[in-house]
Image (cartoon, rainbow, N blue to C red; front, top):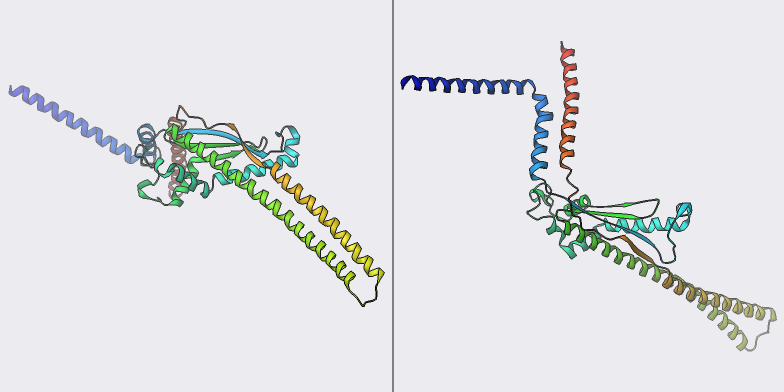
Length: 319
């Protein structure tokens, strides 16, 4: 009995000794390779833990649209690239794209969908969630966060815009994309109304000026005719008649221009044509977990290699 106890104690001592020895070797190895551990091992482990077990799935909803004039044919071929119509189409798309990424669009989106709450759900991992640790929970913080989850790309060849929205639920991504498109359509309608009113206003201003000139010329001629006790001057009378005729012709032209501008403003307008509706994603495209972990590992190796060479150069210089 005593012998078995002694044997067991010897085994325990041996195990403790081997464990202690292994720990000491590990500590020695870490101290010796401290740079490698700090630049490669630790970042890679953090990346594995976060992207392997913590990071939330990200779903991306995509849509495509084109902004063009009602009198504009679909752009094709080389003429599409060089023609003024295609240039206008690009400008119109740039205008709408800038609006989608603007603060006004975000305000409307937050009012319609409470997007702040959508991106603040507890189901989203703490790093990806809006308002990380209650930091930047104001509107400017939301605007920065919005730009990380909403992107738009304009193809300069086809003038087609591609809108991408990322969210942590597939239905959220699709819903945000749809609301942004609806708001962009409202924005285009506002541009149409503003352009129509501007065109009519300018034409009306010219018409008013022509009416005033015609009225002044007519009144001058009438006044000259009605004056008594003055020497009649045929030359001056003919000048007044000619001025009245000119102003009446200008009035006729301005009136025709006003009618034409009104008709043109009603006929020519911009519209947003949807080429691909916002789709409901059925698979998370991000984060690219394995790729990100490998990238972290490779980047760590590169940093470790560079720092190792620098350290070796410093040691060689001191020696």
